[in-house]
Structures are given as structure tokens and as C-alpha cells.
Image (tube, rainbow, N blue to C red; front, side, top):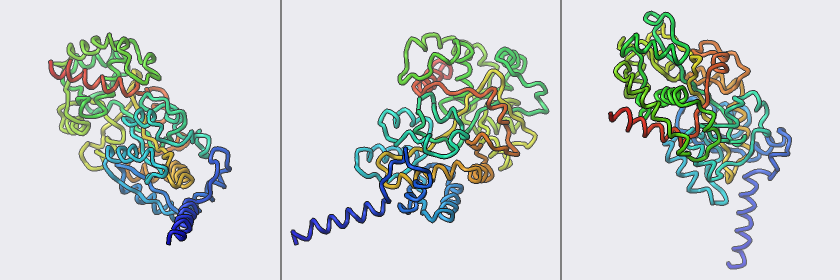
Length: 377
């Protein structure tokens, strides 16, 4: 029995290696070789926490096209990342590829969780959200994380009540004073559209955003004058409507309480499609700028099926799947070479006026300081 044990273990190891597909250098291999390796691997395990209907459909499409089974696991966001982090020192993990949301970029980058860089591996990478390939939530990702979805905040308004929507910071400030309580945004501790507005308040009152770029940690001297932002907000507080969520802002506008608010483009489209917002609503990104970004996918360093994971990303980034995702869930494509009908914000609008978030440590600090210096005053 003792003599048979090494033989059995050897056979099991060989079987495992065969199931995982051939070993190749993905960074130098041809794409055809990677596709062949992915087919040999035979499956990929993908973790997400949203768009369940779309990803299940995408999994069927992927298997139909390549004969590779896509195991789509939709779970709690924090649980997904805790699992990936817990497995990071294992030789082989159970996750091949996963969505990376903005708040997790710094943590996963610091932990060196993902294989890469993959930008130069995946075909047509240059046609997919170029800025998001390099920076996500203010963290330099250097081509390790692949964009698959973009979202953007803008000003949502009722054209029957707002005939000349403000474009500049000065125009918005004047409009708010002239139309008390008609401009709304949500408490930034309750939603990202409110975070975007306060982010712009900081940019316009404290000297811009360039000084934060690339910071891995919060630099206290760089936030020393944020009292100017809190001063502006408190001086205008009686003329502002602060709501409790992204959806609450939209619902209040639908009910006529406010006539203008900051909102996410995909959220607005979803609310219109569900009948929670009137169809006449319009949206734009003002010249003063509002934040946008998106989510990415990363290939786990210890994933068993790296070739299939790379192929899955390429598949999700394809024009066909980007269009399907937009049609199913209203999520704006990551690709920049597609013309999409029915969008609230144009590609030109995004290029001209969208601004990137500052690094996550500053966003966390912003939220806490807003609550302390504005909500609690």
C-alpha cells in the first residue's frame, strides 16, 4: 500500500495538471495559443456581486462559442474579496477571475492579488476605456485590471423647470441661491453620486485634484484646506436638499420636490425603465466636471484557469457582449469604439467633462469629514 501511494499521488497530480490545461507564458504567447489553452482548461470560475441575469446569459454565450463552461458565482462583494484574500497564499485558488470594484482596488493592489499586467495580452485592449486601464479610484493599476463597465455621474434635471442648466461652478452656485432647495444630492456616506458632488466641491474650493494623483496614503497637508469645502457647503446648506440615497434623489425629483440633482447615468436609465422617473428627464456632465469611473476584472495569480480567465475578459469586452450588457441592464460600455443609441450621456460629453476620482484614502476621509463637518452641524 505504501508503494502504491506515491504512484496514486503522482497520477492525481498529473490529472490535475492536465485538467488545468497546458502551461504557457501568456505574456509572450499568441492569442490563438491562449484560446487553445483555454479550451484545454475547459472551464473558468468568475466571481461577481451584480448583473446576475446578464452574467448568466454571458456564460451561456461563452460556452456556446468556445465550449468552455463559465461558472458564474454571484455573492456578497465583501465576502468575495475576503475569500480571494484568504486564498492568496494558496498554490491554487478557487477563483479564476473577479470583478474589482473601486473601494477594493488599493487593498488588492497592495496584496499583489492579480496576475499581470494583462493589457498587452488581450486583443483590442486599446479600444477599452484607456484611462481605466491605468488608474481606478486614483490607484495606479498599470494594466493589471481590465475595464468592462463604465459609469458616470452627471446633473439630472427636469427640462420643464430648468431651461438653462448651469455649466460652471460659478453658474451652479448662483443657480442654487436663486432656486432654494431645488438642487439636491445625497449624503456621500449613503451613495456615490453624493460623493461625486462633494468631490467636485473640494476640487473647486481647494485648488483642484492634481496634487492627489498617485498617492497610496492620505497626506494630511494636502487636506489641510478642506475647511474651505465645508465652509461652502455650510454657507449654502439652507438652499440645498440633502437626500438619503442615490435613488432618493431621483424619486424626489420625480415627485417635484427638486428640479436638479447629481445622479449616476446607469441608475437614472434603470429608474426611467422601471417607471420611477419621468421620461422627459435629461442629463449632462457640466463643464465644471463630475466624477466617473467604472469597474474592472482581474485574473487571480493563483487561479487554475488563467487562459480561460483571459478569454472570458476578452469575451465580455467584445462589442457584442458590451451591447448586450447595455441592452439588458443599461450599463454603459467600456469600449470607446461603439455608437450606442439611447444613452443619457454622449461619448463626447464624457471625454470633455468627466473627471477621475482622487485616490480611495481621500474619498474615505472626505465621507467621514463631510458627516462630521456638514451633517452634524
